[in-house]
Amino acid sequence: MIPGALLLDAWRLQLSGFALRFRLSFVVSLLAAGMFVQMLGSALYWDHFIRIAIEARANWLGWPNKSGAPTDSQYGTCGACFEDVHPVQWLPPFQPIEGHLWLVRHVLAHDDVETAERDAPWHRYTRVKTPISLTYPRARLDWWFMAFREDKRVTEGVLLLVFFSLGTIGFAAYLKSSKCFRAPPLG
Image 1 (cartoon, rainbow, N blue to C red):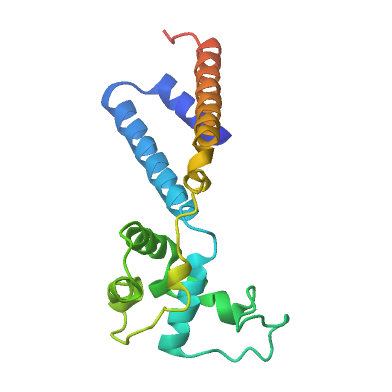
Image 2 (cartoon, rainbow, N blue to C red):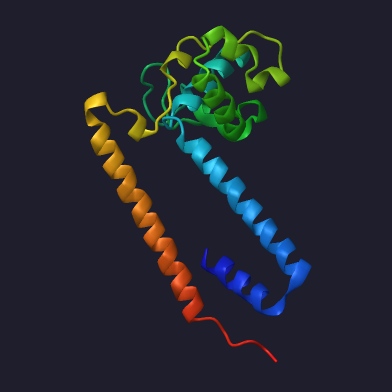
């Protein structure tokens, strides 16, 4: 982020008008897209889509031979084995960003397994029905502040207020410091 901040500062000093606005809008768009992907990735518990991808891959392409895996297999998967995690790393039908978008959309809609599986991302590549009934029911949003019970609403509100306040204070400090170190105008 520091090189990016230095680049933005250099642009601010060297450019003006349309060129500056165009570059800044590009950077803001890039940051917004990055924030969207991060929120999407953190919306679900870290392994929900990985387990769904493993189950769908197995039902579509078969179970791999894990006899050469360096670690023991638990519950049919060994977690860090290439044979189990390769779908989310190497196979486009199981690309995690698209998979998380699909999964979040169906979790928010409270869709059942059949409805969710019907438009799963891997169906652009195959018409094979890939049951995901073992892993899909576990999927839920993992925003911890939404998991509080009713009697903990005050705690939730206080924590959110603290986090929002700290973020606002940090952003205000950044704005103040950037005004202090502003170079004099050229000319």
